[in-house]
Amino acid sequence: MAALFSVALLVGTACTQTPPTGQPSTGGETPVPGGTLVRAATGDPKSFNPILVTDTTSNLFIGQVYLSLLRRDPKTGELIGGLAEKFDLSKDGLTLTYTLRDGLKWSDGAPFTGDDYKYTAEATVRSRRTTRATAFVNVVGADDYKTGKADEIKGIQVKDGGKTIVVTFNKTLCTAVEDLSGAGAGFILPSKPYKQYFDPRTTDTSKTIDDNPLNMAPPASMGPWIFKEFKPGDRATYSKNPNYYLGAPLIDELIIKVYSDSAAIKAALLVGEVSWAGADPKDWDELSKVESLKGFEFATYGWTYLAWNAEATKAPWLANKLVRQAMWYGLDRQAIIDKIVFGHGKLLYATQPPGNAAYKDDDLNKYPFNPQKAKQLIEQAGAKMGPDGIYRWTDGTPMKMRIETNQPNTVRETILQLAQEQYKQVGVGIDPVLESFNTLLERIRCCGKDFEGWISGFTGLGPDPDQWDLWHSSHVAPNEFNRWRYRNPDVDRMLDQIHTGPDCGEATRNKLAHDVDKQLNEDVPVIWIYSPNDLIFAQKTIQNFAPTSVSTTYNIEKWWIKK
Image 1 (cartoon, rainbow, N blue to C red):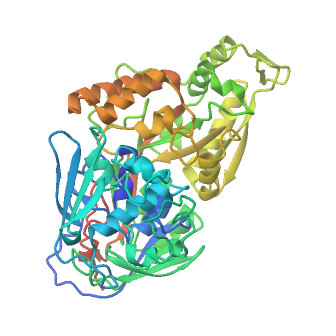
Image 2 (image 1 turned 90 degrees about the vertical axis):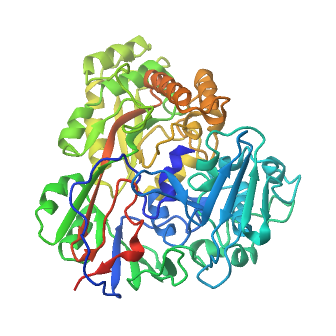
Image 3 (image 1 turned 180 degrees about the vertical axis):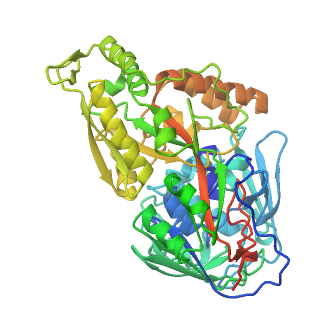
């Protein structure tokens, strides 16, 4: 599932291969150990259990302690050896074998083995709150285990004293390595401490990992940092992990500190309180002039979007394609690029992001800002203008609805304000709703039809064109990713071929992905507003800080602080 590419990274920055603005430290000096790093965040994690979350904020906290079997080459983004030094997919695509590195240890001294991977997989499949179970849907025995017909997933076998993991599939899976090695499957939990509270060797499906007390207090680490404590609304603190397989960090401590908004983060950067952080586009020019800071800019494999719930009870017009097209014409996206993100992004017209081999937009409708066209489409759909300047739907209901977004997020809040103003001009009333990200996420992932529109983003969609989990109708369900409740049998068919073949060749899959793009561009389940650039600033005192378009912290164990 390429839609989850970024969670395989320590501090998710999965992007296109665009040279950065700014220069990394050149090194050459003798590193001085010690000190504390401070990373800024704008919210708390929903959980420290990677099975239960996929959002960027939670994964920022989680990715310090838990890892996947493979990691990404920081220059190319390709999956390379990590905890597993080797991996092999059989020619028929039905068997995936991993060989772990020698001597891997959790921070508590326990050996890391294939049993930890199998434990995490089984806990994922049984979870009632996860969106990650689809990574294992084609693994032999996964469905029997999920439904309680078996007490293990037969298709995941651990051999050679825990060093070898063999995964077998019911059918060819074009995304097998991507799904099972990192992004889709998520990070790996320490089975020994977790098993005290949840033992997966049972057919009792009422028992899950979902309410495990360790979910908010990671008991052991395979990452560069060891969890120490979490103070909600304030910070999480970590110490360096001497057992980290790439070497213990030179720096002693990491703090991820929660700030109220981007203005507070900017102030903290300016006084040196924060070591590195993402920046608001409006602050780029100012921060770039600060002598103590260095800035980096990358294009991303992602998009900021305005989504529509096609089955919204209170806005039945959203089920009509003409109305959704009208809403795209009614939003001035170029103004968003120019005046809200100040050029730090690129207009987008469908789901494949720029930089992806499947991306092209020459034959896609660009939906240029055209309020009159928007009105024509709304009327063509059957609505009639009311005396108050708001259209009435075919059942007489005023076309008024909510659009929600998360705060603090200056960009999304400003986009929502603009959308409210511009949609009023085309006869659609908008009730803006601002809420915490965790509140918004919970509403759209659980609550079916009681929401209309929302502004959010997907980061790290990845180089693989597979987006089966985002658009396939089988994923219209609680805790799944098709939260816009989009259904199109033709798109389902093409997505199935991208996902499971029979032809897993790059050319075939990319052509199918573009055909999906064309249909999505016509159907408008979401308005793709733009593909944002990732903006990062760091104190110049942080040595060996050399982010790439793939990862910010791939070499964090080598960072040190120059006095």
